[in-house]
Length: 87
Image (spheres, rainbow, N blue to C red):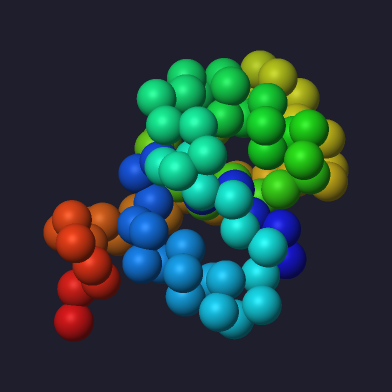
């Protein structure tokens, strides 16, 4: 699957997804500091599913009429502490 991980998505989780065979681009390394609109535009342009902890993307996606080739997964679990996944 093709994912775009938001800057707030843990890098260790990006690595796990990549090791599982998924095509993952991470904003944290490819375009840090991008606005939400820029991130959503990239997901749409590259036909990727956005992985994020940021609730703001719901309204933004609704207003922008995202194509069916991309989507958003909003994670509502506490993000792991910086430096790795919580064990």
